[in-house]
Length: 298
Image 1 (spheres, helix red, strand yellow):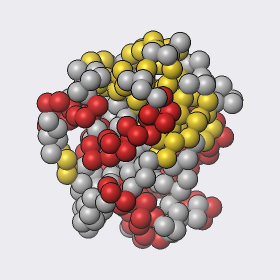
Image 2 (spheres, helix red, strand yellow):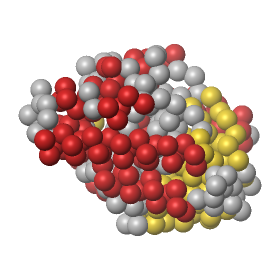
Image 3 (tube, helix red, strand yellow):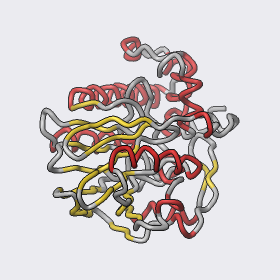
Image 4 (cartoon, one colour):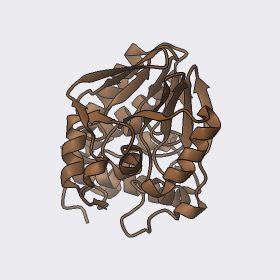
C-alpha cells in the first residue's frame, strides 16, 4: 500500500476500516484514461470504471458511488459526447462498485452475476466490518447470469465470466475481446493496494488465486488489465500478483500447521520482499489469519 494509504483507504471505502468516514464526494475528481481500442477507465472515489465508447453508445463496468454520478456523467460526455449509457455491468456487489446503479439504472439495464443481485437485496457486513444496507429496487441488476454473459456493442463482444469464489462469490471478469483489455474487478488490485478476500461475502483465497491464474492463461501477452483499484497494468503485473498471493497462502498454511501466533505470521521471512507499511500489512494478514487460521484473533 502506498505511503498515503490512509487517504487511499478513505477513497476506496471498502479497504478503509469501518470507523472511518465515507469519502468526501465533493472533493473527489473523476479522471479518464484511454486503455486500448474502444476502452477507457475512469478513476475516482471507488472502484475503477471501465468504459466502452462507440457508435452504439456507452457500456459501463461498475459505477462507483451515487453522489459521484454527476461527475461521472461529465467525464463520459468528454469521452463520448451525447451518446447514452446503454448498459451497466457489475463486477461484484460491494458498494464502491455498485453505488451508482440506482442512477445509471434509470436508463440502462444493469447486468450482474446472480449472487450480486442476491447480496444487494439483503445487504450485509463485510469481513472488514463495513456494513451495506439493502440496495433500493432501482439499484438491482435486472439481467443476471450464472457463468457467462456476452454484450455485443460498439463492434465488440464484451464478455463477462464468473469463475469460482474469489474476492466474493459473485465476481465477474470482463473481457473486451477486440480491444484486448480485461477488467478484473477487485480480484486484482494494483499500485500498492493490498487484496481483500471478503469471507463474509463468500470470498475464498484459493479461489482468488485460481481465478487470477485462469485469466493469466487466457489473455494475450500484451493485454491491458484494469484492476479494481489502482493503475492500469498488464500480464506481468498479474503474474507478480499471483505469486504474492501464493506466497501469502504458503505462509498462512505454515502458521496453521504449526499453530503459530499472528505475530509469528507477520514475521514470516517470505514477506520481506514485499515492502508493505506495517499497519497495512497487519490489516491485510489479520483478515486472512482470522478467516483461515484463528477466527478468535482480536
